[in-house]
Picture 1 (cartoon, rainbow over the protein chains, first blue to last red):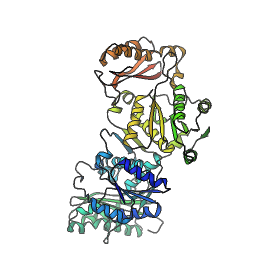
Picture 2 (spheres, rainbow over the protein chains, first blue to last red):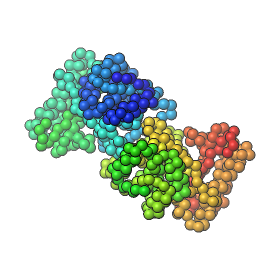
Picture 3 (cartoon, chains in turn brown, green):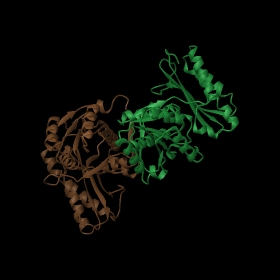
Picture 4 (cartoon, rainbow over the protein chains, first blue to last red):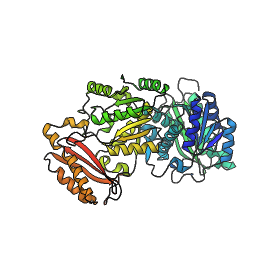
Length: 286
Length: 286
């Protein structure tokens, strides 16, 4: 696995692979690779011939009070993990390579897709994600790009951007990977103290509670949210950012579940903000 | 010359040309083709192997009080002109093909590049231009795209977008083409009555006045603007939108010309808004 730091070196390597007829897969990450990322890489390896993993902690998508400075950057371990998973190229640009002096362009997705959930809690986050992802798409020009369902709003926004701007890339969204006790794999899990790590399981427990109640026939979002909040409150260091039930496609809030609904949580455990979600599908087996 | 109406047919045709090793040129237009457009097509034919001309009157870039409805759409004549000029493919999508239900994504260039000139007079115009152009780039995936210096702010914004979003396209900006009496070629010249057409020459006369004064050593933007306004006011039906002297690269207003400066005008002649410009270069022959 080769490591490149510049867009021009990246383009050279990808062009070489493409000239040999390879289909290109891209797995964009912020590093601190976990099982979720490795699942994306493996899926990319099954479906394409040449897999590019990008590692870039994108500063523009962090708010002023967020964790940009302490975000984990275990580069040597990440390189090893990507190589062992089978990636062909690791692209790890500096901030100055991604945002040269004078950068002034951004991509925005307007409307209900970005109005709620993390779009409300983290102003500027989705714009920054859309902008860095379109840059990565244009730099790599992949045939297929792989994202995790862990951040469903991010995936929905990028899907919308791909469609609206006619980007010549196919998007694949892969299921959440969970640790043994159900906690969704996340780079930010590293922040948790052992005790917080234990409390963090309330996110998944809350989602399970919603799934159980839904399976028993509950369809009112209000009741589901109340029972999820009750589960989360059992953790003494938990602080709810949001607990929402929204249409799985438009991300608009729903009152009564009649079409597939996304149940999405953002919860602080101590100082660490975690997200998780599940989709409830009426008239289908879960 | 083939004519296609859909993105999928466009992609099929371009892919065929590319598979034969052709370099692709794109000339994006709103139709009502004039000598300026034909110059772009000819330049594209010299530099690339397969030239796509797009004709799309982009509704999003017209303000509510602007001329979207009466904008000329002489399709048969345009098709003939593009074919006679030597274009290989004409892409003429419907509005519903370019903006399907649910479109919500746009591209913005922030900062001084969009703060003044038409960016101030026509709110939303540059965002709409950037968005439709990135769509055309992604649909065609040209090697080179051709724009006119007639709209220098549009060209600057697209150049900035190409750089900032790492679009894999080279941009060529071609000089203004003028009619015999100096009036810049424009689709909107068709709106002018014979008398207005006569008065419209004041735009170029004003620019010439600035060039003359500059050649004689004048460097203060204030004085140049005053003398240009005096020229324009000689036309009884002229109403100035703006007369500006800005840095040719950053488009920020300048007081004293020490680096290449763009002199840019927007003037209504009756109801028709016309723009024109010239670049003044200190220390060089014009």
